[in-house]
Amino acid sequence: MNAFGFEGIRQQFLKKGYTSGELYGTTWGSGSASTILDTDMKCEYVKQVRSLLLAVQKYTGAKVDVIGYSMGSPISRKAILGGKCVETGEDLGKPLTDVVDTFVGVAGANHGAALCFLQFGETCGKTIGLDCSSKFLADINGQKRKYEGHFVYSISSPEDDVVGYEACGTTASAIPNQDDGFKRSGNHDEVLQSTVQLQYSLIQNHKAA
View: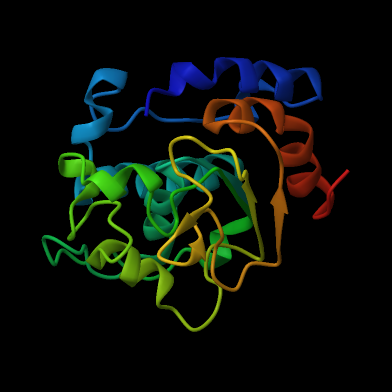
C-alpha cells in the first residue's frame, strides 16, 4: 500500500533506462503495514488509482504500462474497468482499456487471498474485500473479455504466504482472459521483488525474458 516500499523496484527500473518522469506510484489507504488486515478496496482508493492513470497518460501523451502489486492488482483492474463502485454505486466512467498498453499483476489477489480462509477483518469482507466470493471480485472477474490493457499478464507463486496459490479453486493471482500467466518460486514479498526482470520484459517486449 505504501509506494515507498517499492523504491527498490523503482531503482531497478531506473537502472534499466527508465527516467523518474516515466515511473509513477501511489500510496493508497493508510499506507501502514499494521492495518493490512483492516484494509479493503474502497471506492476512494479505486478513484485515486484511476486519477493517477489518467494524469500520467495526459502528461506523457502516451499509453501507460501498469504493474499492480498484491491488492493493488484488483484495485487497479477496477480503476481501469470503471463502471459503478461496488459499495457506493458512484459511476467511475467508461473503461480505460485504450489508455493502457500492458498490465502486469504481480502476486495479485485477483481471486481472493488465502488468509481469508480465516476471515481476517475488513480485508476479507464479502462486499469490497478479498473473500473469494466478494462482490468486488465478482465485478472485476465477471467480464467477458480482457479490459485491463492491450496485453495482460500475471505472475504468481505456489509458495505465496499472503495471497496463496489458489482461491475458491482458481489460481489466486490469475487474471481472466489474460494473455499469459507465469509461475515463479518464493513467498509473497520475494515474488514482488525478485521478478523485476520478468516484469520489465513483459512491458517492454510482451514476452518473458
